[in-house]
Image (cartoon, rainbow, N blue to C red):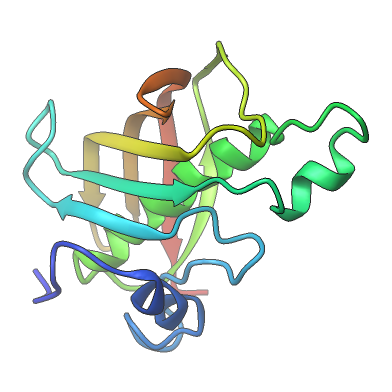
Length: 169
């Protein structure tokens, strides 16, 4: 297990996006505007509902976010796929935080439920991810997790069996 802190501010996340946090060729977050969180408030390898690890993060919502202008003009809504991407981003971050090597990529998700929307009047999204599996073998490094996205405390997205892998190629 690597010796990283259990919370990260925006500058830490930007270091991760530049490849400076986990080292070259390892897990990175995307750079803004695709970075879908402002801070990680807690991360573990053995916490969460299943004892396999978890990660929690927050994203401040402001009316001037780039996606509100184009999705949809006159009816601004954050695309649901961006919330899903935020969940994938954080799942990969957790694997890198564990000290596991390789670049992250999404493999899929078993089930997605969108029950609410993110409009410009929302203030904050909270991502909560609980790992059901965290696998590292000679040939495979992968996390499987369930997650939710809350908007101002209201659950608006739920995912089951989200998969992210790390690959050294």
